[in-house]
Image 1 (cartoon, rainbow, N blue to C red):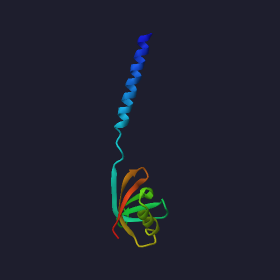
Image 2 (cartoon, rainbow, N blue to C red):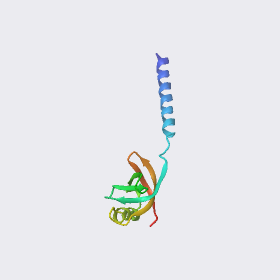
Image 3 (cartoon, rainbow, N blue to C red):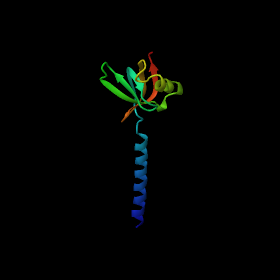
Image 4 (cartoon, helix red, strand yellow):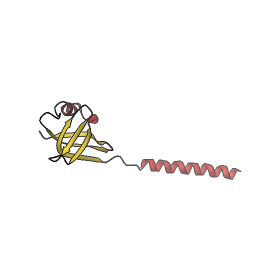
Length: 107
């Protein structure tokens, strides 16, 4: 009876240690850059970067992680009816597009 109790304790400890080693092995999402291209926002969270004329590649941009100055310029100045803003966005790729960490404006 004690043999089965010890075996189950050892098995449990082994499973926990394997689980912890696999949890530490997960890699963070890769950083990606998109652009340069025409970037515009229709709202505070609805931004898009188009590459090409006519646009052959389109990326949805999440400006939530940008600094206040970049976010304000992106959402107030770079609107569809204004002069186009040309930029490259760097961030992490998500299922819905790119979560912007930084943006470089060229104009």
